Length: 145
Image 1: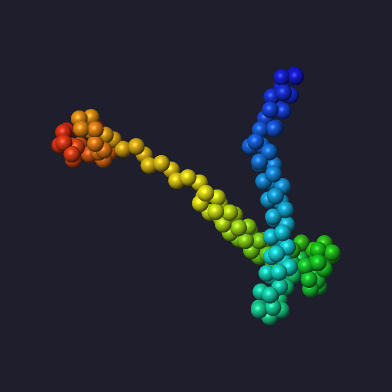
Image 2: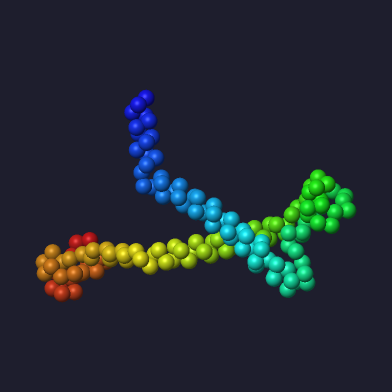
């Protein structure tokens, strides 16, 4: 039993597990920031441009109701399709996806380019030969594939 817990401890403190945990925590915080950005900064001007519309109040009631806002419908317990909140969530997702794209693009700039695959050398003259060549362009020897 002690060996089991020792193995778990070794697993839990490995760099990859800790990196994933930190990524999840930062991702959750980043998601909250992005949601706030979409809800409080981006969607209000878009709503004004569309005639003073608040996307959070776009809903389709699935039962008869006199509710004018989503909050009223939910308070009455009326089932609704809240497509305005869905629009906000889609915008939220697009912003997060774009931000992740930018981060990955920057990370890839710092990575070393992959070394080119080693090319074949002629066994006779020791010059570099294309992989699909059947004859050496330098000494004209026939090459086995």
